[in-house]
Length: 442
Image (cartoon, rainbow, N blue to C red; front, side, top):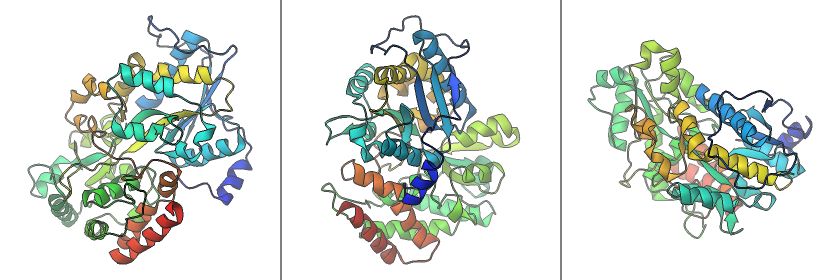
């Protein structure tokens, strides 16, 4: 999720502003799944409406299949065709920024983290939709509100969708071979476990490249686990702290147990490394277990998932790859776009989507924690609760453009890489991160 530099902007804009040219057009054929017979539009759909959605590509096949199936059902129910462009995770932020800059492109985007806060004034007010869904389905998780509601704009600028939850994935037989009867539940135990795995040639694998999901999730998890944070409640930079330095020391020790090459890993590298037997443990969404069941039956029965160990702060500090949907004001069909998002996130359509993914996306609505899928298998259950008590990336400060820019610049990931890869001292790495954060916040 690279920041949109001048070079990236020129590279993207050179290809033209039409970003949906390679999309999948839905609604042109009869859907295989019928809409709920009780469905009635909440928003008055514009005459002649047609929609374009830009969203990140799936990591599990059930995601794309059901998302497109539900989109076809929306077309059948409303007559509004939906064109979907599936793009790589790392391209979403740049193309979203390009659309905001040019004032043209897709009507809607399923983006990452707090990107909508970079250009909130260019986004449609979706307060009516967000409040409808929240009231109907048990309310939003606190972190979901952080990613969707702008205190500055005093309105919802995005509709929270959910998170590709972060949990530990490991091989049961290799855990037992390392002398553990159960997966460790704290940082000290996890480090001992990782050292034993490394000794047995089954190293840990955690991404330290600019991976949108995997690198951010584990570095923030460790930082928060020791009580470190980028900024305080007043948005003053406090990254250069004893807690941060302790987190970096711990990360350095963890890195010594990792597979070679993690410095260049992006999202997907750890999946492949785990499924090929090169690593014995990683932090990931449920996609590894999902793919193992379908494509690697010999190891599928040995794959296990577990909640992330807890650091010295004494409570879970899981950080998750969060996605939300937003609508640009340049869209000619804002009501149709809001109705599409409502249709996709209402229970009759959201539950089959989550089921098809086996819980790969944990919904942002608290009422959906009751879906039977979460207790269908012990490997699925850890992902049910990943949004409880978690923070947004700019915690403990305020959501906004500054927090979004800090995340997009990978400042926290780079700080960890400075120590683990480049050999900088924790003190020097924290000072570098402090300087970079102050350039944004001050």
